[in-house]
Length: 367
Ligand SMILES: Cc1cc2nc3c(=O)[nH]c(=O)nc-3n(C[C@H](O)[C@H](O)[C@H](O)COP(=O)(O)OP(=O)(O)OC[C@H]3O[C@@H](n4cnc5c(N)ncnc54)[C@H](O)[C@@H]3O)c2cc1C
Image 1 (tube, rainbow, N blue to C red):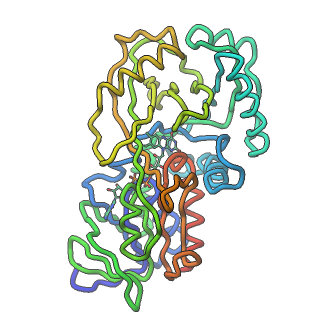
Image 2 (image 1 turned 120 degrees about the vertical axis):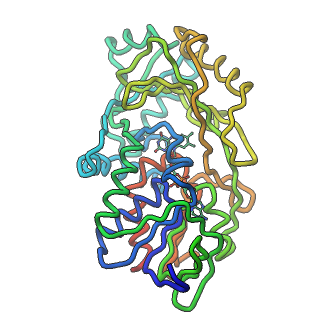
Image 3 (image 1 turned 180 degrees about the vertical axis):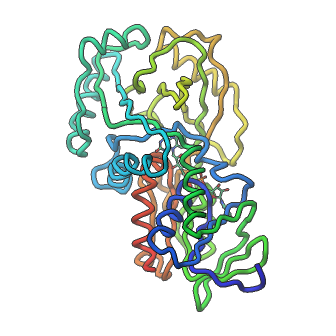
């Protein structure tokens, strides 16, 4: 690019959020010059390749929060999107179980919450299902959530990349945006290839979106990183549906759950570990704690068949020092900056929500 190349839309961050936004923009506005900038050599190198790959149901979130609404809509949209993108999406459902009377009350509340949150089909596990689960789980009772599923995340990102390019969008990898600032005609971006001018800007920089946004306005946010580690399991385990414990109030995540990927590989996790830096090394002490929790919930698990897998970092945020529980998706109304949308605190269920989030961001951009 030469000095002061002009484009229409710059999307900073080539994770699932940025790719989904660019997919939506290039389909709706094929004549606009859309560019995705990704600082790494590969797309989705951070959180988008370090998650459970679960399409969530929308069950746990505060009614009408962005997490609730976008998760519910995203869950529905993945059905068609997976067909359009020709990727695997399996609605395997999930069990949420309790192990004692105290947790039973939480489970009952969760079932009510599911109805209030319009999550369809949630029911108590049948006796046949309970018998199947008892071989693996310290279980007293369980509810079944049929709308949870699994998608092939790497395949989804490759397909989005292909579609963006097919619709004349541009994806620039290894291209770090070192600075953004407002300009009379939009935004000035310092790229690897020199400055460029973009009419609109979408900040989907994941773990770096708070600091990127602060180059444009005082959003009042602080990053709060919580790492989640996974252990893979080579033994025999239940693979029909996911298995989650009751999300008890003291947990920062959903509790150590068992999921499997598209290939059927079972994993346990993620746990929660507060961290100060973006560092994907795995603390073995943290894994030991995890193992003791696994044995408590899933007594059939052989510890010698558990091995360290990978970890991801949740992009939680604090607003004026207090944990902000929802997605932070802000446009001109809040920032007073035309044609700018920022997406921060985009933690779970961000993968699930991404098709719905992208539609909403495109509307907010006002292009
Ligand atoms: C442990 C864990 C488990 C999870 N499990 C689930 C799940 O099962 N289901 C679910 O729905 N969600 C889940 N999530 C959440 C989901 O993974 C995230 O919401 C989603 O991946 C966030 O995508 P993103 O594009 O915002 O971030 P990222 O994938 O991190 O992408 C942001 C990109 O921006 C790039 N970037 C940053 N700054 C710049 C810059 N200045 N210039 C250029 N590029 C830049 C980065 O390199 C990065 O690639 C999980 C998250 C974690 C941590």
